[in-house]
Amino acid sequence: MATNERSFNGFQVNRSLLAGGAVLTGIGALFGTAGAVMVCAALATAGRDWVRRLDTPPTALAHRALHEAKVASSAGWEAWRAEHHSPN
Image 1: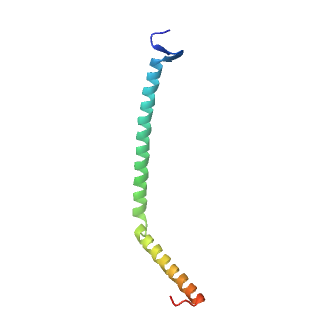
Image 2: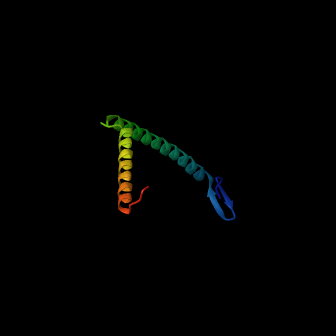
Image 3: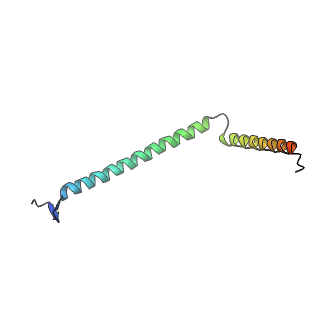
């Protein structure tokens, strides 16, 4: 048995190979995290630029959609009341 191997009930582990794999896995995780941060930053920047270039701000679009939904709901309610002759 080599000096860098240890036996656990017949299971032999090459400690230097295990340590090297753990180090490479840690380095890979750091690079993966750094890459994910860079991708998120690029997408956030692109999204902010896209919103700034819009003709109508998203808040105005949301207010318009909410108003249209309220008008449609009111019209539907009025139509239902008229058909069912409900005073409410």
